[in-house]
Length: 183
Length: 403
Image 1 (cartoon, chains in turn yellow, brown):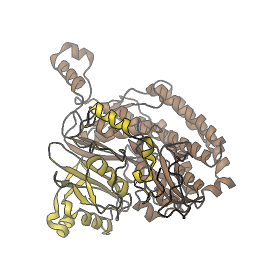
Image 2 (tube, rainbow over the protein chains, first blue to last red):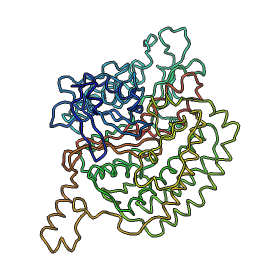
Image 3 (cartoon, rainbow over the protein chains, first blue to last red):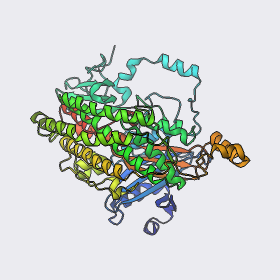
């Protein structure tokens, strides 16, 4: 923690210990990627395993908090990095190039919270349908049964052509150019 | 495989390449759940594969925000229906840690029994279905016969075979029924015989070796980078087991070994899981021996109800009873990440509370989700049949991936 403050200065907003033994560090979103990279590569830290990327919408505070859970296999230490994003600027640097497992985890946070991970190679919905238009379900502003009325949800569902779902360009996968798809 | 008429002949940009796009799933036995694999094939060779998930998405995390802390327990076993008790346990363990609550000694041992039993339960399903994927039917039958015995143990303990919902904050739904430990002891004593039989059918079987060795190799550094945990990570040679490295429930006092693989291929993942079942049996027999008597639930006014006599006799107890029943347990503000060594990898729960009776956020750190995301990297360049094997060797459960 002292080292972090010495190197990154004001980018380290604060720190606390939760539940007796869980170290939490709050960082500025602008430098989160550098801090995570340093934590991974510095030999004294070597937090080499990114366990989780998730987010929390507190509701009482506008915006979203992105949470990283790190584990150091050598030093057997757990660390939680938190990054508060303001409501009008839900974006943070992606860490996919540091940890490949961040790919799906960041996609999930984008899907459910609408956080834009800058530099993510393939940021699209992962759990919700690709053409889902009601927003990001885990935000507190999202009602439990969805934003649209039941009638509208039914109407959208009925209007869908099930074959649309099986078109590769819907999936956006594999970089496919749908040349033969004329009928 | 059921390619739809529109996707079968699409090619990547130029139509002369002859590469095929094939859908495997979402309804296909070899995908081990409602998983769709979109594969680009050059003949039998997999050029790229894109897993498409979300078919089982029921937004448990959102539902959790609308339920009291104890009402979330039934949601947890519906995620991993292959190891339901483990999910029940880890959720309440995370909440208890956030509350600073220490459960009773008996409860600890009972939960260790449950968790190790579930490890065998989950590994047996993996073993049976993986064997089927490479064409061996007998291990499947043997494995499912043994699973049936654990189903019976579930049923006599919790009343349900799959949706157990057996834990509560501060203890268990009920104490173990009479004779339960004897049945479990019987399982622990007789199961190794079946395991040896399956072992002799698969471990040195030429076909099995040919199908699994050098297939889907991942190096140790890549495995860490890809977020692998559990048996998959250990098969790549990394000694990371939460029961040893971040022990909970006195796991450091149990005597057991952590099997480590060398090559990180499908065969090593198979060997690691086979050995893990034997080690779980070792833990089970030690836990059965030390199972103490005493209460299973903690006596803590924050969570436990006053006795019926007290409720009828004094006003404070009645109000207390009323508050807990109508409002539910209150958890102090803060957040807590708690993880156990699940059957599929590091199974974590991240709970955030603002002091109310419902969580602000309840997040599952999904081991299968992270493990599955490595599939494209592992399968590239292999044959379609190897893709099936690699997918099976990762041991995924779609209920937990989609949540």
